[in-house]
Amino acid sequence: MSRTPQEIFQSYIYAGSLTRNADALAEQFTEDGVFEAPLVPDGAVFPRRLVGREEIRAAMAAYYERQAKDDDRKPNLQKSGYVLHTTADPDVFIAEIDTVFDGAEGADGKQGENGKSEDVTVSLVQIFRVRDGKIARLRDYFAPEVVG
Image (tube, rainbow, N blue to C red; front, side):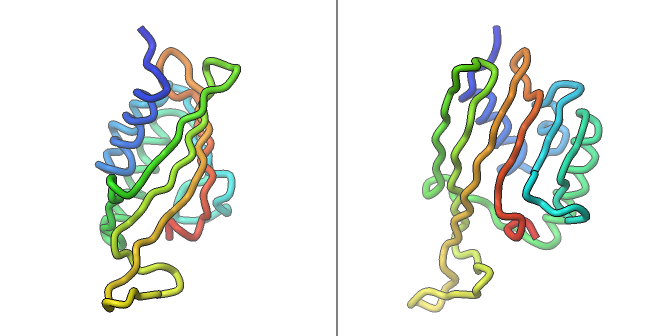
């Protein structure tokens, strides 16, 4: 039985953004799965294009390790939200996401009236193409400066 877009998306988010588990994240993809972040410039810390489950596993493990040292922010699930859109193609769905980080200092360094850093919202769109309940291709569109 194949997984629903909701189940695929939630598993992907849990493995990646919430637990930063590169092994679990890679297992969400088909063996030949492709992860792309087309707006990320070549040579950036965040990978622009990864092909195959093992490349996804290795590159994301390295990224999560670096991220843990430089940025320990976690998303606030109560403030964050998403909407899933199915398409005419049953193997394609789109996620619109607004991820909120509590008190994370934004690029402009703004602080609220109480002296604490303001919440930062990161908005993005992800296009999923699935095969047999796994991600065959994921295109992740976000502002590249938000990942350092």
